[in-house]
Image (cartoon, rainbow, N blue to C red; front, side, top):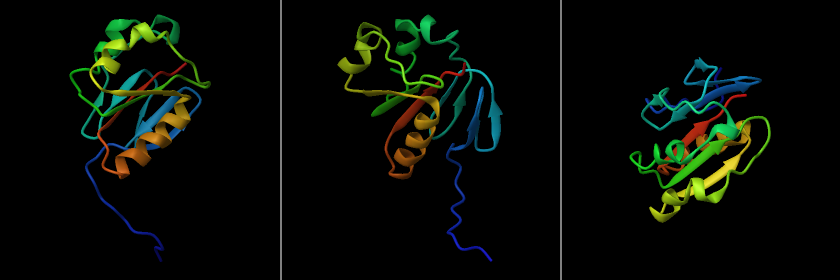
Length: 123
């Protein structure tokens, strides 16, 4: 017997995460991805946290989220603010957290009907 409400949706949600991977709606990824409620984008390809540059952050401008979450791997890390100043100028909130926290936070904000996007770095 089911004791919880089943909510079938086409929205992309995180269903698992672990060392070196995340799963979105049951599909496993082992490389950097961007997740929006509608899609998983695999064309965002920074080669690690140290390689992040302004172009990696400019990628998110066209997606126009209210909030951008960046999962920085196993530990929370903060890039230099000049890298994402264009997002701040556009009124987009930017939050940095470890990847498991970014996955959980994305799912919560999505459930609140927030316009959220997450970039996931995997180490």
